[in-house]
Length: 437
Image 1 (cartoon, helix red, strand yellow):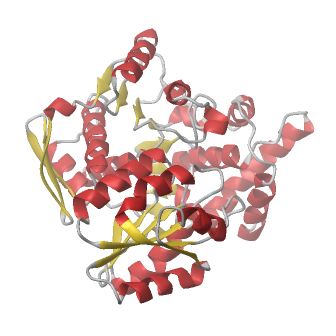
Image 2 (cartoon, rainbow, N blue to C red):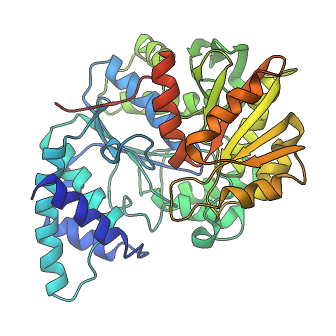
Image 3 (cartoon, helix red, strand yellow):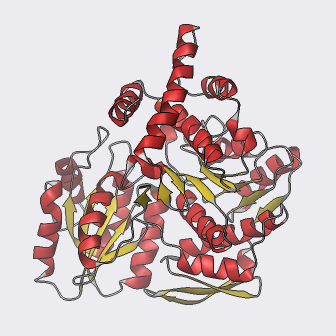
């Protein structure tokens, strides 16, 4: 299979959409020899923070000289970004070769009356085969959506599971209450497998504890009573957790919570024979970068990008604006998908800006920018829509006439990547992943 044939195959099966349930992926992996059962896996679910927790853990493990596979979604820069080993993207050649093997098995399944595995199921199988072929020491595996019915939920005995923050998102698939969504995420909890969780309030905490007790698994929740933030500036955040000092370069107090999950997971991994000492954890957290998560990409005027696309992400963004940009004049550049609760987003963030530039993300699910701008006009005085390729030019033009302006680009990750690549690289602020040579 050539790389062109590989891309065409993925595009073709992607048109078929998603099929809930694990029957197809389980059958596919069984026929491929169950590669997932021969890997050491950390399984990560949650509404927000999966990628950040994975990035923190990845850097900690790399600092200790481990070979780390990561399965990431969604991606920002490249399709092959979803398959990484020590931050290096899978090559076109490896992808085409492994996909060819998976396609042959999928074709056989279809001939026997099974559903053809979906694009995400196919990609998940490719990831397991790739990481096994490349002999990684550990795999950091993110769910795509939910947990219990997610294609990644085929790992029968991961080293541990992680639950990041839970908020409202994907309600059409996961349910209309926070407890429905939590229940779906809890589907990754396995019998006897340690589960590390972000801090939860009493009601959600009880549900999580009940699940862990039924599964007879060690349960560890981030202990906010032992967390003290000592410094929070645009240069980074210093904090003390369980009497030890740490520092992160990623901005936002929510990233402190994500780094605490990585710390607790490192403690658990030590029980499985990984050698992660305090220095590895400290340096790993300090050196972690994760593109598109409240990231500065340009100096004058300051431009920050953030992939906030659901309620939890917007709340974190609101807190960051209050923490870092008090007294600044904000210019928003925003694009969203039509299935997101963008009305909540605009109401929440409107008090901090008089300028809103709406764009249409490059996605079949995109909300037209003109519709977003029309709604924003109810709350933000100067709301306009622009084409993607002119929106940033307009933002820079507006900034010339403002005192202490800050341009904030946020919303769907599908349009943030090109903004980072253009303006971040121009300004030397970005460090994108690399493809294999």
